[in-house]
Length: 395
Image: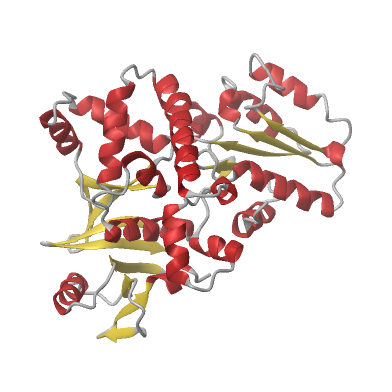
């Protein structure tokens, strides 16, 4: 197992706190492995095995008909007043699971941990029932730094190409070549589409959903509106309404295949309601579905940077400053930062264009350009140009 130390440390920091620990993320990103790592930690800390209750609810071993059966089954293991640790993997497979989770939560000596592979887990009734009672840990596939720790490859450019071609999903590390990776990703994609979208959302037209999905994968890093997607598909002979596109986009983001990023007007200091960008949770899935023709390496790099910013806990927006665009406006407790991503800025006109988007911002927050250029770090009147691979390896 790959030690997902950052996520593991988050779980450890919340141990025995009076909150339900909810780990969310796309299927196969490593949630079950994280639970196994944490269970190993608990055992090393002296927690007895009979006080650790772990159920993978995708397994046919646990064929509960309803939430009450699940609750009663777990409660049957609780024999004394010592702390018990309950792990429910893929809990959304049990109808009205939130009632079982809430019932376990109110038992004083039970510490509850759950996972789910779609955002529906924390929407609607669950959010209402458990409001203020849970902490969410958002999990992603392997970061570039985790990838480098695994392979110990010192040629970072070579490693980056492997990273985007062979997938960031942990299981892909066990596969021998790109053909096997593509077959695995195709199966994973179809599993998510069928289980998390078609069945749950009761969508009948799987072909149209695939068209929307492929359109998003081909438009990574591009500003899109719902109407633009509908009009483009319709002009290509796939007649689809704006409302249907909205439903499909919601389903694809809820299942974590894509991540939506909204726009922010830097000058007006307000969020914009029109046009968003969609970034893939794993860029290799794009290659598996569409092949490698017409690949924009700059947008792929932008996607990788987005995922790393998300891992680091930033709130992320697309910046608009009058007629110029800033790739990312990010915010955390330390303030705001502006980021441009460009594969190379060695051509003078390209560098001038990337600098111009940042130079027109009239505040003193940090501004950086991330690029694949293997050059010394440079400062342009306060705007830092940084090698993106070095940045990805920062802790």
